[in-house]
Image 1 (cartoon, rainbow, N blue to C red):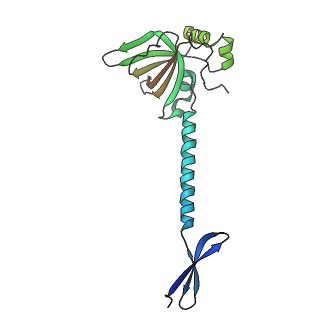
Image 2: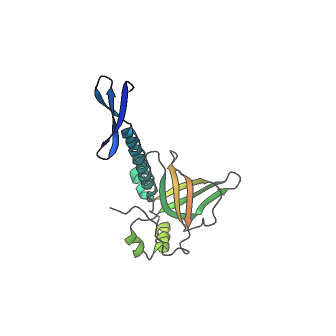
Image 3: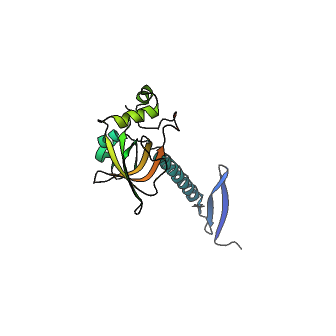
Length: 192
């Protein structure tokens, strides 16, 4: 009348987590339903999502380095993209229209916000940095259309990698004309 094995759901602390297996001989053994596997799988998925969000937020929070900081860190930066901020030396701008190759030099701008304020604001700090013959300079190469805002004393924010040839190869080029954005100070690494 009954089969050899009869299964009944057992409620354990309000949830069905186990089955009792009763054999024809009267033996009772517990069997797992597999809910633990689903809970573990769900936990792993949530943990992976949290990890991806945290790692992408950390990458997006990358600040700008000054040229002096770039050279001070050197090999510590490895082979990853970095952002550099500096002021464009207009006399060095060279653009090859045929190959869309843009080369120019940027001069180091201090990262200390107090120093920028003391200079009279960002526009004046950019001017002082460009006129300083002791300011560290960096040659930048960018492949693409020449931006309209590329001019003398514009603030350049370049993202790319330092080449073995000593040239910074930029994949991204952002420019700010200091007279248009008088109050904006770039988010840079603070001294400390």
